[in-house]
Length: 328
Image (cartoon, rainbow, N blue to C red; front, top):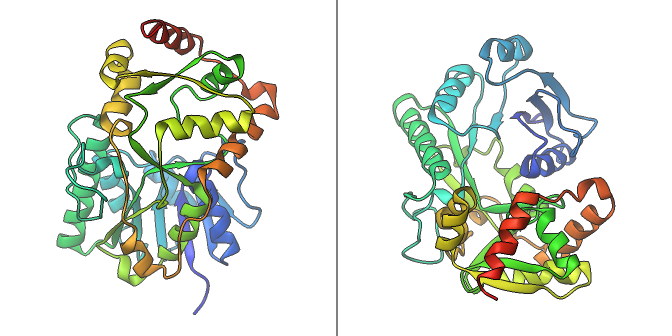
């Protein structure tokens, strides 16, 4: 059997960059189709670049030409129309189409833990999640009616060294270093699952071209869940400080900042713990091994290494001061 030929649409994001590296290390013949604008996460030298905008189907056809693929993965599809476009583009050109959905599509708030792939899909609180559910519906119908070779993968909160788990990014780390209060939603005790992108990639790449994934959905997460207070303490420890945590309800945060609140009420405010049995059945022996304490050190080191990365969101910083004052 020859090399797998795989096309990533995207490929330089938080999750996809690690998957690109693992794919190349696994001897996958990897093509990446994007606009070539990312400099934060450079792609491996062995990748074949195709410069095109997936939103312009003819430019994709011009780049792909007569190539076909064992697997096509779209890392940047968010709406049903984008999925329908991909079905038209890649039907007959790939033996597997992988849609990157989201674990936030699961029933929110969950009625039972741990979450499995059979947990219902329903999130009335976040439009992003409802769009992902609608995308899955399109693919499920295409698989049933046309035998379109769809595989659905649902990441939960997957991070790399550039991504602070709290809204505001460096703003939160800067507040920790300055001894300012850090806002943690709720009472800080809800459980959250943070998966390092390298752990995700080691489970994801073996799914590519795998015949038993067609028509199936998988989530890929760590088995290690932390409270939000523990997450804050891990980041502060990596910075060498002690955090001043102030708890504010998610409803209050949403009232003050609807965009921040949508991600809380539609996702982060609810405890989430996952059962990864299904992906382990297809990728025997895999488990996530990178604890968040190590990830927190990577995050702190990355931001501290370059002052240009230490950008404070002044509006959000002021809002955090205001929210903290209400608890003083």
